[in-house]
Image (cartoon, rainbow, N blue to C red):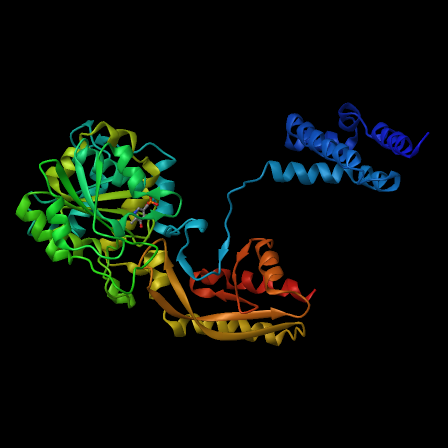
Length: 481
Ligand SMILES: *Cc1c(COP(=O)(O)O)cnc(C)c1O
């Protein structure tokens, strides 16, 4: 035999050592797993583990002795696989990035009250669409509409028909519904500098096309004047649209009409002005030190007809798209059949109602995202110092820990240039690179998500729930071993 044949024969020999699935399933250990996890799941995992071994033999990654070892650990490997297959993929992580509305990490964490309200209403029957006093069919949006009336309606005096709000799945759906209702077959005027793409492939031109409205771009990327809008208005124009530049800024040689100019133009021509705020705030952003950003009330007060915004950005609630504005326009959206397709379920109404109620009661600290924004640099710093002290008391020679100044971000496409001063734990470890450290922190249980800055790992406790500080400490301790 020549050499390749010898190798092939050896490989065939290894394949023959693999037990059949029936043989595997006959062992006492597998019988226990079949009992505990179900026979089918246990057999599926055994099949997966055997298939992996087969692959490793084919790739010549195993010889006789390593295969023996693998077979001796077969039951353990099956059980590990089984546990993973039957556990959740979606799980909690500790956000130590300092980005409060982190899109990859689920944006706004829900309040305790929201979770409690979901639990009590969604695990039982509820009056979701039942008018209890009258005993007849009701509407699901009455539960939040009364709160939006308090928060927005009673605050706006100028609106001709009053202000109403409807709820859809997310802000992308809100923009789609609004454009389709107000401008299908007609034209919508948008500045070139606002034809944005928001993370997760929300592009204004694409949503516009799907809505059946025709995009009429005006101005240039960096400069658009009110006269550009004026000249573009024809008898086909249905809407003027302003889009918040959520994730970028244009600086330098720039020009944009002021909101007041656009509002005056819209009024003069009798065309509604819509603003896609994205991260619409229902509180005064200046209270957390953010200036120059328009909240939902600011926009409506200044005369914008329709505002669209997300439920899980600065509002701090569940994923949802909110459309607030002139009641007669909102009424048209409500009767659009798309509204039925984009409606949200009872869990969202429960979470949103609890979140809005916190606003009505001025309980801003009850909303986790808002509570995080309101933390002062000193408050975050105290917690960071406490952790650093605990770690240094443990005398861990390999770990180097310092508390330094830094910046937290609002995230979620809100106020791209707005940062909050914070204090960071900066950690390095002898013999482990910062990149390796963040990988390992991500692999801890629960995963800790941190970032690298100048060859150190930095952790911002602003976005860590105080009860989790101890877990951050535990994750860091692992580097000592
Ligand atoms: C975030 C954002 C969107 C998309 O909102 P979702 O709730 O994620 O669908 C749309 N427009 C703007 C301006 C945004 O900031």
